[in-house]
Image (cartoon, rainbow, N blue to C red; front, side, top):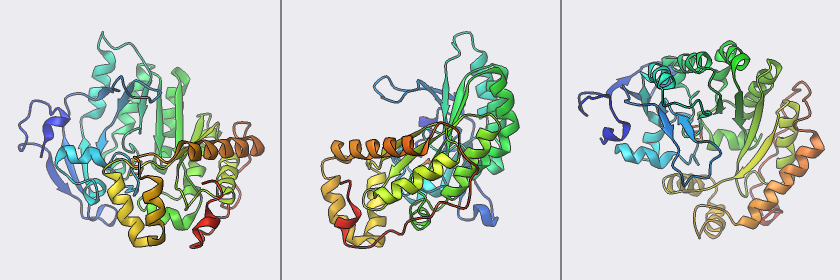
Length: 335
Ligand code: SF4
């Protein structure tokens, strides 16, 4: 196992990262690898197009187990596989809170914005056991250091009082990702996550407590969650949750995610394998024109439903449109 990638704290690989198996229903089948990392605030490579320069990732691997997760390939750097191992072999940087506090206090630290939840979810189930985020947020609060959190996990609400305290001293941004409100699709492609409706409730609760929460509407899965009816159901739910913003992102399939997602597609939607091979035949991204049309449609719906202009209380879950099995052409008015 190439643990050197994790910059262990002066420890020999093999003497460290002791596997911990927790035999409770919540964690059955999951192995935690507890390590003490050497550093925790990571610089985003200059070539990256993401809108932040620094990140904190207290975990590697993610039991939320989204089929499409773009971070899957990073698990292979540790000699795990990008499929089931990514979902079930979770690396826990148990000293993350103390490292954050130390690195924020370093003279060279300039107090820049730090993004969390950008690689794997910092509020995945492991966080219920290890409780790393409270210490991290406390350190950021005490340093009045701006930060943001992207999550699919409802566990973020456990830390709401801390987020409120931090927001009194610095800029705190949150976002939940909800690509669709189709329950059937959710169970299949995001099997370890809270439901989309639960995530929208999280967004609403954060907003009610004065913590700005946007929605990353992603990924939108071609052929399975991209009809105007499905997009409208999602945006309506996002508006009702009082999200401050919504931005759409279409599924992309980089190595690691690609193989795992396609194996699922072969099993659950074999009729879509050939269309996907055409759509993603040239690389990780769907055609630009399709991405533009999805973004334009979501922007149009967001304006129509008033996303960012204050939400109404969430009513019953937005109706989840059924995914019609065939014909494919009828599912794809935006393709
Ligand atoms: S919640 Fe995010 S990090 Fe976790 S598996 Fe899903 S996409 Fe990946």
